[in-house]
Length: 135
Image 1 (cartoon, helix red, strand yellow):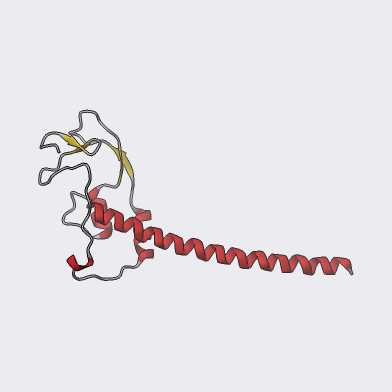
Image 2: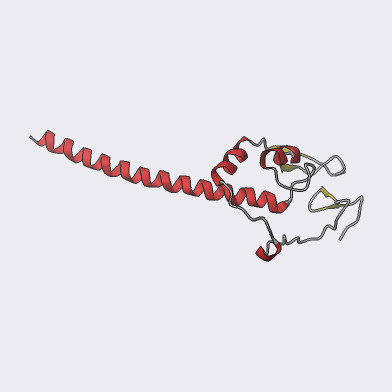
């Protein structure tokens, strides 16, 4: 463990109000939650697609380690989750990515099905053209 003023997590400044450990498991037990609601995964994906992703370093990091991600204010504005707009909770980032992956999976499956149908139609049309040419 490290303390205030030190770096943890590969160049991430030590959190002033918490502990930095080598592993952090997010509590996700359904029995610890209330006000559980479904989300529109396609809407989450659309919000994620509009979120600007940048590369940056923390000002406090003397090594200037590079990181990639959105600004927490933009993430909070886009998704309205988390305690405040100065941090992105790992559980929220993971949830947004999981919902987006599920939406993308559905889209890929729909495109694969449509592609299969179009290929079948194309084979049928090629067979018809072959029959017409044979006449």
